[in-house]
Amino acid sequence: MIHQKRNAETALVPEKPEHTSLRVMKLSDKAIIPKKGSRFAAGHDIYALTNGLVPPKGQTMVETGIAIGLPKGTY
Image (cartoon, rainbow, N blue to C red; front, side, top):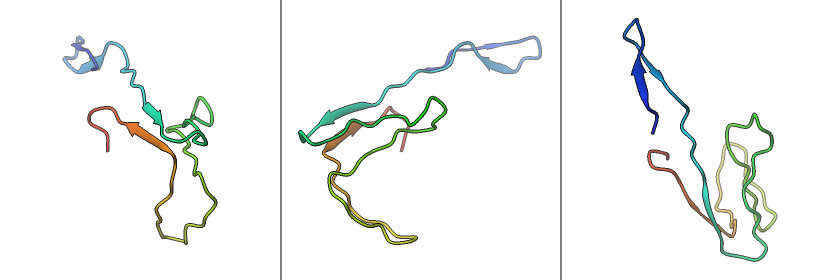
């Protein structure tokens, strides 16, 4: 939760940033835990257990071997 206080201009400003963590459970010995590619990354990289192709502008189901618990309010 971000704690907020009002400054002299009565605008809300955060006191300290929220720190969230990603909960991950390995369901396979071959699974790789998601990682950030750099400290500037907006999200985590996830890894497939098998090779495959995702068609252009398409989608597919990919086995990752992990279960993820997302923080409240994410989608």
